[in-house]
Length: 187
Image 1 (cartoon, helix red, strand yellow):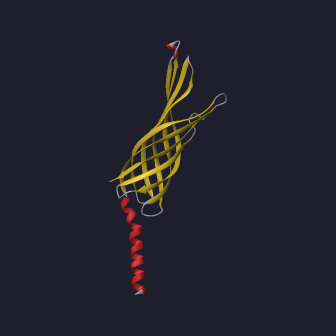
Image 2: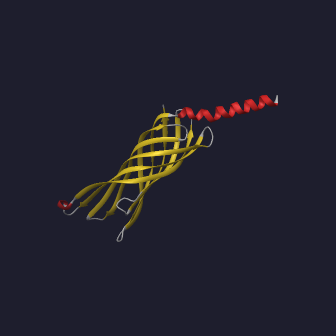
Image 3: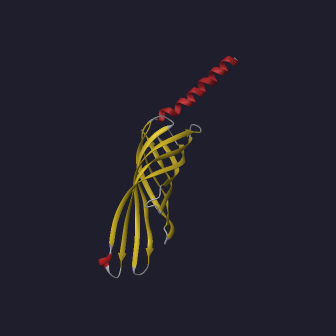
């Protein structure tokens, strides 16, 4: 009888360890959250936050490693505004990441990721008294991105996830970080 219990225990453990491996394959996701912008230059400091959203797709190689691409709208920030002028910047990114996942149990997992992001900043300056001085410019920079988070599997196809992302400084003065929550759908 003791011999049978050990076999059932081993068989159950093997089944539990291989079940999440069936989660390999393609997936899509979308999320919403908040972006924090911290601007720190010699003559100007600003910390503010705004809403963000993203969508993307990925491929889970196995239960531990995934590859992902995403398009993220990081938000629009008013840098300066008074009755005469307004300066605003909008950030977006296309990014690719490698994700390392550690399953805690059949439902919960934690993850960390690192990748590269093409961060674009669209700057707009408006002069309300003299519109001829209105200006706009756009600049893209490749920056590293890393983050961490957790997931909860509702069923074999629908997963809830929340995470934190931090981008390397843009123009050496702007620090962007995000907190997001969203849904993953696996095929």
